[in-house]
Amino acid sequence: MDVREASARSRTGRAAARRDSRMFLFSVFAESLLTGVWVVLAALPVVTLLPAFAAGCAHLRRHLDGERSTWRDFLSGLREAVRSGWRFSLLWWAALALLAFDLRVARSGALPGGPALIAVSVAGTLAVIVLGLRTAARWRPGLGWPAVARAAVRRGLGADLGGSLLLVGGLAVVTVAAWQLLPLVAPAVGALAACAVAVERRVRA
Image 1 (cartoon, helix red, strand yellow):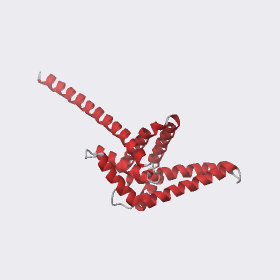
Image 2: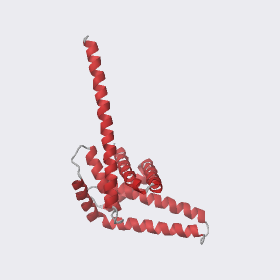
Image 3: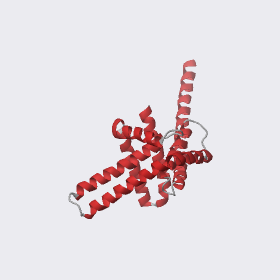
């Protein structure tokens, strides 16, 4: 009887743990969707995209760690990220603009070796976008963006190239969502932020 009772309690405990795990995963999913809305709204000025993404990743980290995380905390993190990261954000956008110009010239046929130049421009654009997102995901209040960016480059192009490829996949999801229906961009961006947090935590594990 005691053995049967112990077995029943064990099964009940495992079932409860599975339910708790599913509820936690669902709460993370729901929080990611909400975070995507916040990030998209905060990124409307365009130049604030990276700081908004950094604030969104920080919000999701707090949620995963069981800490308090409200929209006020998100706004506080956004203000700090904008204050400390606006110069880096402008440089990031300038690099993307230069690569977009290179791609346009390569596609025009004005230069020899057009297909190779197109491939290099596309690869460079993806690298700059992904490394910018990884920098935003790694940033913490009090850290300098250039130093965080250097660490992100070392990780993203060396020790954790796989994580960068995962983020390329996340960017593809955002692109497809925008192509299908523009409002889907918000939840897709939230999923991308969750992916960036997971990639950084995977590296630290």
